[in-house]
Image 1 (tube, rainbow, N blue to C red):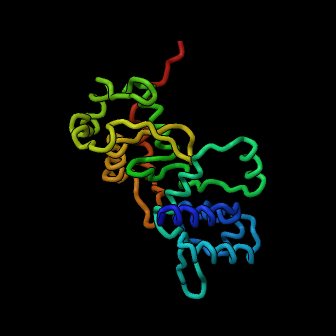
Image 2: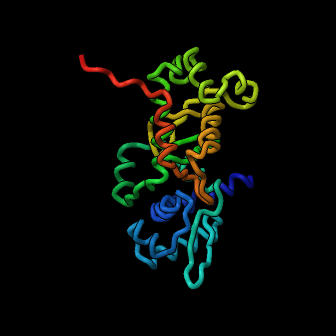
Image 3: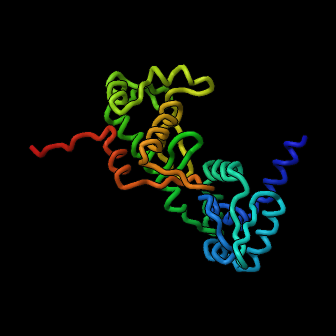
Length: 238
């Protein structure tokens, strides 16, 4: 029953649209002062302070004092994961419209472009890469039962990823998993291959992790290199 009580308490805190908006404003892992959160959520400073007190008491956010100013961030990565999971759940269209009228928040640009999604790469960069892998024929099969093609194995080996070396490590997952997320409703690559690609990108210095954030920084060179993977040649005009 302890788990049920915990779920009930957390759900109660997140149920208020204003508090949900504040948690969403902190989803990128950055620490923000109350006045900035007020601007981002469209709430009054007094309302923000009241909701921050409740979220802090409930263990969903934590306070960081920097001189005379107080900053707030999500308490743990698990809180962020819970907020993201709820954001990705589809709801009735009429309810969605009602919620949209209550609070409108933009997804942080850094989170839209590239971010950690569990142990693999998420965001628009990952969705674009997945789309190219499919179009180039590196992946084949149905949407939820894909495998790496012969061509894909050859091409991935050329950038240092060997599918046969990945497969034995997949005890609780799969080499290829179809994954979707709130920041970009298109699918991207999960599983062992998605994990290996993220590791390669970070080790190559193309992507860089940030402390207290799931957002990933992309170097200009890294963006060029990732965009070259499975890039189809441009069609020549006849």
